Length: 123
Image 1 (cartoon, one colour):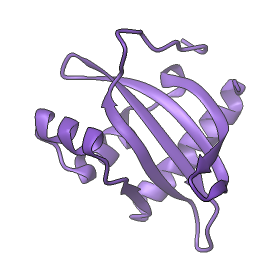
Image 2: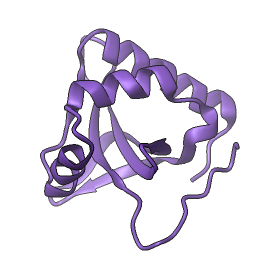
Image 3: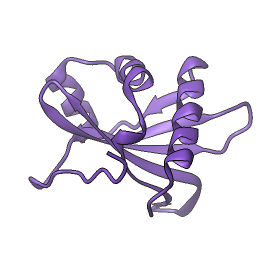
Image 4: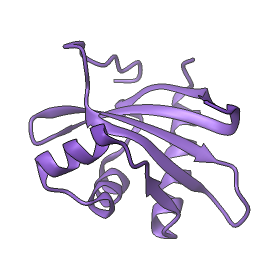
């Protein structure tokens, strides 16, 4: 699903608020861990970088449903792409509807796969 630039900017602002309030976490997945090791970053550096860098032009898709092994989860999943140290990085974030303000889980943070370039509808 593609969203309007206004909707994308809104979710980016929510993400920035979540970063400022320490309400972001990185999913522990081998792809994420391996890529973070490759570039020498910690999850906190990822969130700071995305907070400073992310704009509507980085949007790829969303919001989509997060379908886990236990079924659908509340909140939307957003996909962005950013260039880091020569890598096109696939960033998938779950906007978590929890009490206390915006929260995000970075489900995926790794080099885009399959030799396919990500498509950016608002670039």
